[in-house]
Length: 285
Image (cartoon, rainbow, N blue to C red; front, top):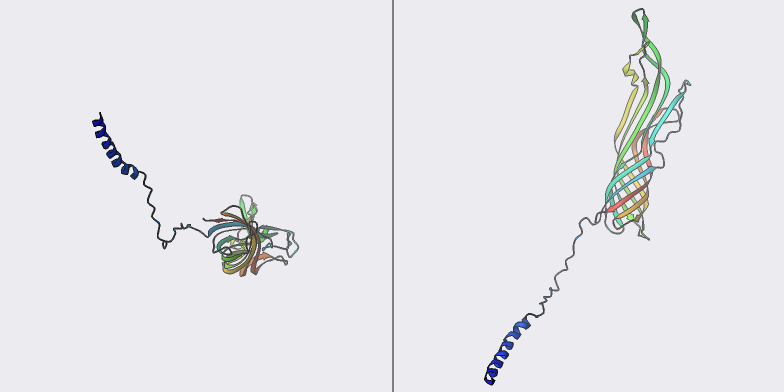
């Protein structure tokens, strides 16, 4: 028995001595390799930072196509009617870029107020009189019949402009700003004078179609504009701002037509808009 113990005990010691390094190897701490000090830290880049979309609706408080009269009387005293259908609403969409906390710029496409107006009186249309004699209809040239005679005008305008703005700091979520811009205004105006609305009857036929159209002329094209603006934006969320402001836009060389105090539709030069605007700005990041 002693002999067996003497043989087994050394073997156990040898086994423990051989297994100890292997067990210890299972619990070695992980190797940590420090990055070189001269390697820059990786910073993710935000795509679209600084860009924003914007849109607004407005109202032209100065009524650019305003008329002085709501009724019409012909030069010979015949009572008539005056109609005016003006839209003073404006709207624009665009894109901007925020350079820093104080400077930004925008490119905008705008729809400006429109106007349609007309005046009418009872006048005379030239044509052919018709008389039935038995089964025969006899024509009498160069007769006249009552008809409406009208003058009318139409104005519409659109604008594209680039503007720069200065944000004057943010206070409790409110950011006041001022700005200025320039661009092009497209105007289209048409005037029709002495248009006759003749109606055929059993006793009268309207003949002179070209004369009934009256005299028509129109002016359209692009003209330089400039604008001044001021307002305040409020931060609704991380990416969304409410923008309330005022804008003055002038197109000094634009031509347009209006109904004047002498009861005629006349051409004018120079078109100004004073607009109150409400819109949103959405940041693309």
